[in-house]
Amino acid sequence: MRGVQGVGTILSGMSDMDQLRENIALFEREDTLSAEEDDALLALGRKLSSSKGVPCTACHYCVSHCPQELDIPRLLELYNEHLSRPSFAFIAPMALGAMPADKHPSACIGCGACAQVCPQQIDIPEALADFARLMGE
Ligand code: SF4
Ligand code: SF4
Image 1 (cartoon, protein in one colour):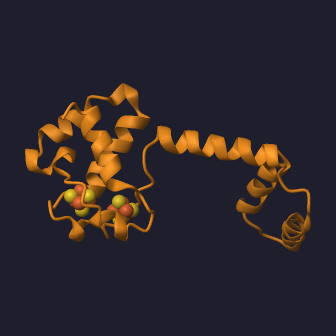
Image 2 (cartoon, rainbow, N blue to C red; image 1 turned 180 degrees about the horizontal axis):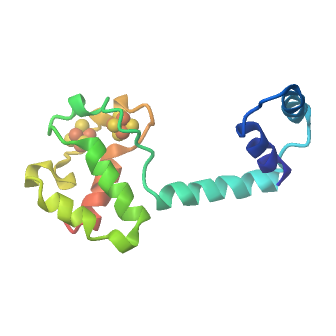
């Protein structure tokens, strides 16, 4: 996995000319990942992203577009937490229990207005439908 080591080296930053030269040399190399390594990394990335939910950054761009006035980032935060921390599975039902029913993920009507403005291109109605299903709603 030479490419991965190279990325790690680049991301670690540069504090002198030798490190700058080393990083330039890395970009000049042609021995990037093989097709098999590429596929393995993509498969790993998909597995990690699907097991941890959605990459919501809580930018709130979507919120004003929701006709149901759902707190989408909060719901997605709970959804992510629920998926990534099974030993804390009680948190999401407890948090939803403190919200009015018309603000639950099941209140999403699937209009897709939120997804159209999401910079992360998250399929929000799909995520909320899955969250509602997991919550037994
Ligand atoms: S798809 Fe659901 S969350 Fe998105 S804007 Fe429509 S009702 Fe709101
Ligand atoms: S627009 Fe997308 S990234 Fe931003 S808060 Fe909404 S779901 Fe999250």
